[in-house]
Length: 396
Image (cartoon, rainbow, N blue to C red):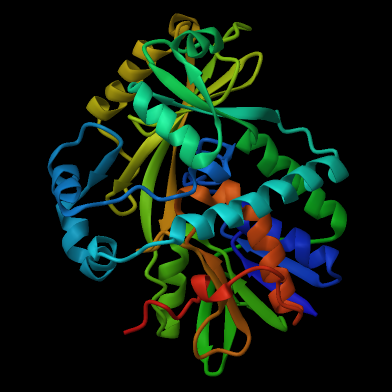
């Protein structure tokens, strides 16, 4: 079977990997050169413990729309434009989804371990991750709830952090350099015979089937098609009369050279600030943060960047050793209930979707690829409640 995957980010590439392993011919279509490198401008964490989505109350929503300080900012214009997205977010009764996502995250972590071992991928893998808290009681509660090991103030300092009263250590979780993972996976797919086409893609409805036309006007014909286009998924789906309810949430990654200094011993999430801090190798350090719903806007105010650096300066013992290298914006494809879409697009026989992973694309990519490949192969994944990820669940 020839499967065409639209989107060659981390989700699309892992999907291509598992489809090829299952015996299918795969073509990846990617729009090519872009400043929106979501698959490389992120925290690079593979962390099932961090998958439960933070609550977004009405009070927090209003605050995030007014103040452009801190990790969350929501443009009032985007709030009004996307009311159908925000109403389910604010509705009471979305429960049990954290457990669903943690199960998916654990499945993905195991697949990462297998993948990295079998394919000998070199991507600055680090085992063990901590979440840090300015309140020790919050850390102790998180350790009990998420089954991690509580670490006290002195131990967090020994790892390279200061002014945190406690943290939680998850020994089996991983961090990875997303740039190296992206490049190594792209190289592996080429070795496996996956064809990569750099072109804009346009979908046309011919219900109950679709057609795909490239930017050159050429039609690309396959047996099945999968949309894995991340934050650009909604615009691809528009001509099909299908709304996936995916909007972009902007994040920022800032890369530093350490000059060989060891800044931290473990990757960490600053839970009170929504900041990820990772040292990938002896010279590369990464800070990432922000959940901005502002549409596709690349410019981030200098005051917000200063906030990120001020927090890092306060909490990294060796902050002075960091030297700025680059920064980049990535757009997280977010659904109202923070669950991805995985399955067949309603009304079409030959079109699937694998998108809406929000800030968890790196964490959930292998599990998504394996689940989607089994669906397309007609086998169906084991131990997965697909109704939780039904692409039709937002239809009125």
